[in-house]
Image 1 (cartoon, rainbow, N blue to C red):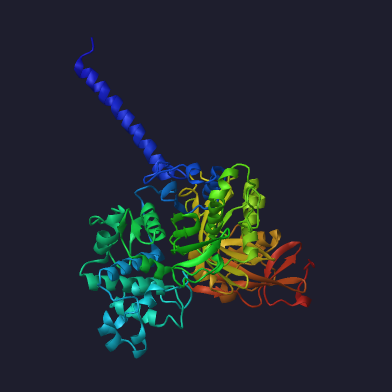
Image 2 (image 1 turned 30 degrees about the horizontal axis):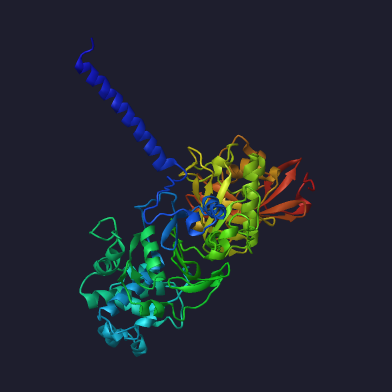
Length: 621
């Protein structure tokens, strides 16, 4: 008979094994899965699509688009008639996950200013800023800013992309006097429309609220806006959430959707007036109309989506809040991107697909029979199965897109020779797999390319400086979920090729950095004889040199060097070699101007002070 002590011991071991397995499964899902759980449980007023006159088939097409073409998506919410029809989370997202609003802080602060006006803490939108920042406007800044009013902050419109010459957000964040720095940015708004305007306007509005209310903007928002809407994100101080007005708010996706629905109801919520109807109408009065391609960031614009006038506001990192009043629709999307995403990032196509699924009352009878609407513009030029998705934060030339498309097709073949054609000779194939996909590419098991996220690009002649990331189909060892940093390109013989990682930027700024394209025979000679050229001992001995070769500097030996051949020009029967020696104890040394390679008795040799009439045995090539 088994003793009770032994039974308890066996049970403890069994439970320990079960806990270990469960922990391992959780760890795998949390850290290695392609995406986190898709949570279909709707938190707030759930409803099925059919009950809200939404075509499930078309809606599924929109959801599939998020899965396959929006790799940075973090959440998607669709409300109609105050019901949650879609609540989906992706890529480390979830009902409790919060996201920085980025430029969406401004619309939130617009509502808070309206509430302050309703409580008679502020006179109105035309109240001058001097009433709140008198010291800064009279003593520090020029008299030209005295005419600025709250409306200048409330209606701020600016591009989201940081460009050359624009003051950076961090300049405002670390400014000794943030108010002064922000006022300077706003004062230049009429002459220099820059992304910093969004941050500066939001910060100044938060300071207005704090001055007139005597409390932090976060406490004011929770008391008068969040709490009535059932938003508990800032209910108590949380060290994980920002409480810096320059950083702004960090909310859940459902929180943002509720604020959108409040505006759709013109400020009313469950029979309670949160903000006056007059204020909401003022916010949307004279909102500029813009196509998606021209939409500025940070404040509301009117856009037409599938024939319906919509109100759209977007944040830097891919956060979108969309109201379609005629259809009683609110759409929210959030993104994991840390960079500003422009309009051609796929969200315009997603919104089109969603609105196609939303039927007007007269359309419900034909929910199944109605033919599918066709998109006016398909996303991307390529339609083949393995074409990568493109996410741009800056315009990208077509030939660069062609390169990525060709690269994606070559990767699918798993042909290392074909893949190698995408890399310049100077590319280092020996780097660690977790730093670069190069070794993965040449391992014969390369997974297909899923997306290309380009955040910055600068093209100078035959060089392309890139920033961003590549996402390959997930493999257990392929980096962090198959994501690798985007590398720089060089154009050789009319075709773009990989050159190296972004840390090579300092070298890329040199005009003579790029190694020349040599024939296989010439390249083999340079590889074998670059050491002897600088005095290193070699198994090849003097076979690398023509009979009359004279080594400069008395044959001084240079250790730890690398020879870069940047140009090869034909000079009669020989080829003049241009380049430099990198990494020597003497520093960087440029190759002699008269250095050539010639064929002597059918073998390539180094030669100097080339004169055709003095060389014997040189074969024309």
